[in-house]
Image (cartoon, rainbow, N blue to C red; front, top):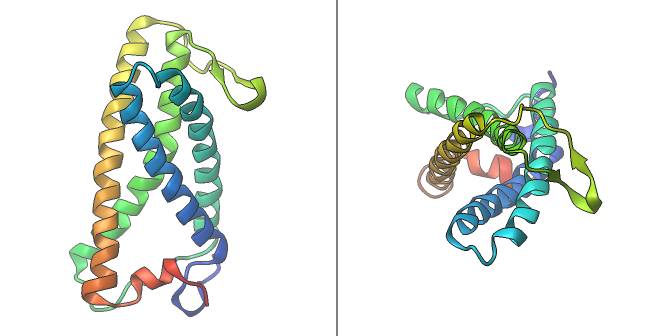
Length: 178
């Protein structure tokens, strides 16, 4: 595993982090809007499915990059519980970035819905077409969305705490290059 130069994440990690942050926030807004608006639901679904597939692929690339390039070390004076919380929340975010699209894909498969991406490209079904499984997966997808939203809020809160209160370089390690 390569080490991080000068306490910064590598360029690919930073690009993936910020572009995926925008995509994930968009997905959360799209998801809430799909539930709230019958008028916009078809158009939002047409955005939601391919964006979810893209997030899944980028999450795989991001995980690969993370495993090959060690993140910069956390400050030595950071309390142990905060170090554990940081590590746990980052791995939870990776798990959610992978699980949410897979559960959504399986949910649509179980519901018998086509998973249409851009240009008429269809994903194959990954779960049998059963209403009971669709119901369970839909509930799981919703629950995971709430967990993702809460985790993102905590992540943003921690980032701002490091940027504005501690001013310890943790935020800068993801915000700027060398």
